[in-house]
Length: 451
Image (cartoon, rainbow, N blue to C red; front, side, top):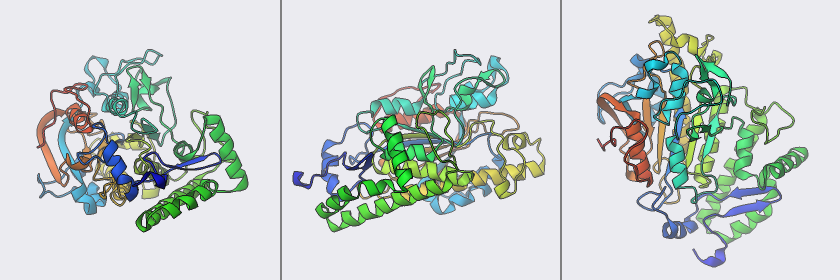
């Protein structure tokens, strides 16, 4: 790349109230390789991403567990949607979270599961303002990589936002409705509105300026891309043929996501300053997939390298009528070994794994700056802080690790740890692969080896 091209690693297509970040283009590769930091990059110098996706209430373990270990394993019934991606992830058996267990704190497993999942710490049992748990693994990584990207991290949810009040057996709602923690007393508030996430990625200026820009676009019924069209055309003229095609494909994808967001919206005005905005899609699968699309866009444009997604808070009693399950998820999770309840839990598990398959497939099919896929250069943890919802146990957690970690991970296998191993051991390993020198985290007892 030569300096006269006008392209740089932080390239934007700009217009009135819009700043659309460029995806990774071939012409950027030399610059990215030359300026790569040892933090949040692969061994080859490409961006390394880290994502955590949470599902509630445990799973039907009989149909979750794979049979066999190593590369020659067979997926359980619930994992059928992942069959075509079997070489893109690892399934782990044996992870545990000691601090999610009751101990002297008694009831409140759902709150503890949420709070402990990314912190490895025991949440203080309180429903007041004196909440306390610990810094989450994603935020430790975000601090280390904060000068690498425009956004240190991206927190998403399909639930509302709650930072106070009493939710689970004397625990604050803050524990159940937040996955990421900036400090031991301050959660990172997740966003549940796809439109506001889109505006955060592509809107320009302050929150108030983005609000005005959005109102202007909605009033004129124009896409955000209409406001950067002149800059896009000028950029196209400076690019080689492959990059021209890649940029056109990217902008088409952005427009399609914006169209889907507009179709899903059920409101006439929004306010970026509102903590729990309206406008969430009524269809749950569409909501999850739109949020996953936002993660892919954020990673593709290197807007951030860290994201968390609370697909539903632990204890969620959402029903799934779209797949024939009218009962609430939490109620069903207390299945009492009844066959009908267990069958319905398996259907819910498979429904969530269908969404994971959507995300992994999209990551796999999105080219990264080094010619590999985003999934090749990512570490993605999917799972729950409860194993069996009826027992409320926090050992044998259902955990999937997707992606190749830039060559650091070994996907395509089932790993049986043969005992209770702190999930925090995995997080120490991930931090180290991310470029953060960490010997311990949470309740870790070591570093998960390359087994």
